[in-house]
Image 1 (cartoon, one colour):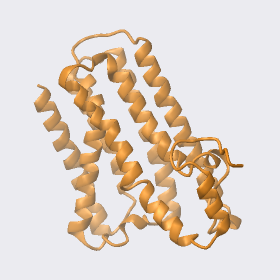
Image 2 (image 1 turned 90 degrees about the vertical axis):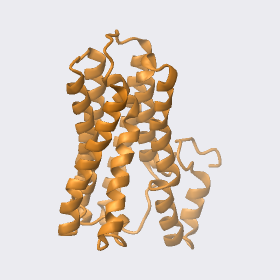
Image 3 (image 1 turned 120 degrees about the horizontal axis):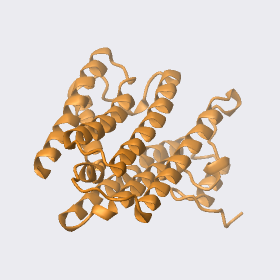
Image 4 (image 1 turned 180 degrees about the horizontal axis):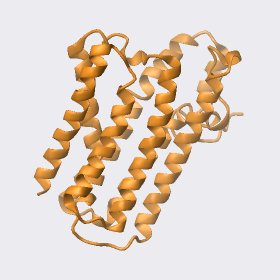
Length: 259
């Protein structure tokens, strides 16, 4: 059962992303990318839930948590892509179908890995009361969602003002972290893993790869690194930015102790 559901959810994730890749590649558009990313989380959640046919309160709460995060994220990213028209991440591969496809396959795999703890408890056949550990996990998830939502809104509002063109944001949560939105996203997935802890035992501990994976991706692959590289190049001679960078935490929000 376990092997079958993991294989089925992986295949489902690949099929969803390849399906939308055909539209994105055909019309050379970036409007489907983030939408598909979020949609895949919802499809895997509901697919696993309905396949198991248990619908325990903790399972319904978990699916609600994932769904709320997806709706928030996709709404924000869709509004943003309508405004900026294209995602610069794909400028060098949008016209190259095979390279473009690699991104979509990786996206499908990434969603599946991140969802591993959630898939594990959505296929549980045991009812459990929502206890303190689950409440703690839900609280961590909510804090992460709150940080990600507020920081995304602060940056979007800042960048929407003409007078801030070519400037960086260092107000609000961005005063304490150069990437608070990514910290919030990593935190909420750690919250979901904590929520799953009452069920984790034996080989199930391998599902910790989910929150580790998203944290690693944000810190070292497609989250922070390309932005830091772009900002370093753009503001290489800007002393104000260099001061901001020197005094502000990269990831975890932290009070500036250097004034």
